[in-house]
Image 1 (cartoon, helix red, strand yellow):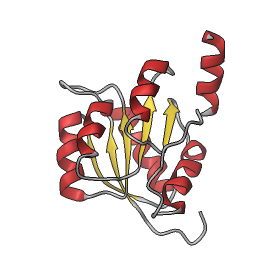
Image 2 (cartoon, helix red, strand yellow; image 1 turned 60 degrees about the vertical axis):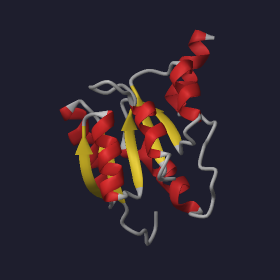
Image 3 (tube, helix red, strand yellow; image 1 turned 90 degrees about the horizontal axis):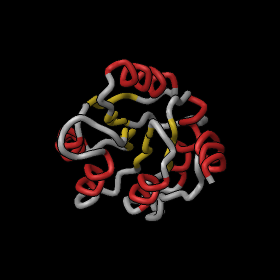
Image 4 (tube, one colour; image 1 turned 90 degrees about the vertical axis):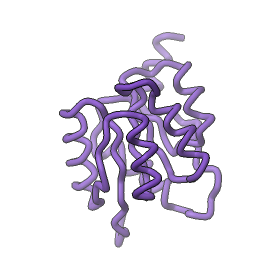
Length: 148
């Protein structure tokens, strides 16, 4: 992203090590991490409090709600772009996540290269109400093809 504007990112990840890795990837891309939280409820509260430019959301989280349920709640007051991170490529969670209008759905592990295009897409046209993509990440496509 040339001459990019620094964006604030809310990281929602319950694995501390992965959270640190994701923070480094975001910073390497030239953005700032507004906060890191480990549960869906914390994500809802921080999204309201901080109004981040984008959310990097794990799906399986500690607590009584997962990342998709947290995003459904956040959607009631915000159209913030979200990039989901999943430990697997199951179709059920992908279909649930689609209903929240995500920017991308990536399968872990991720690299900064995996994040560049979703970030560019999220901010390419801030007027675009439909930020959802039906394109799976490369690794997810491969996994789905194996299970099909």
